[in-house]
Amino acid sequence: MDSQRSYQIWLEEPTLSDGARAELLAIADDPAEIEERFYRDLSFGTAGLRGIMGQGTNRMNVPIVRRATQGRVDY
Image (tube, rainbow, N blue to C red; front, side, top):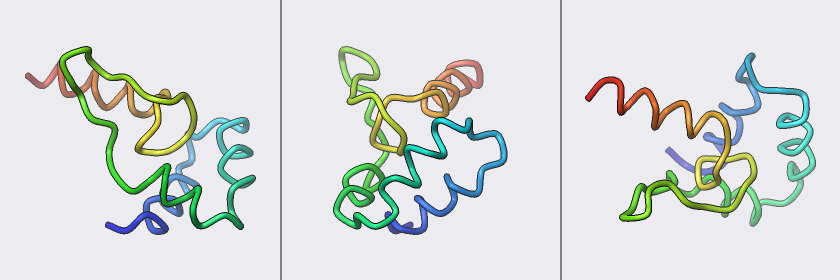
């Protein structure tokens, strides 16, 4: 999936907080920032999940922590 499509999916998420939505809307006209935030998933390394705080799949945020937690539970 490309970065722009991931960005749109996040914007359409009904559980996204108002603050998170505002942060994403603030970068709507910045394709380079959208690319940086959504070009990959934040990776889990030897130190666990570490990344810049913010909205996007390549940032540390509530949806990413939820996904990691669900992965742990599923395991």
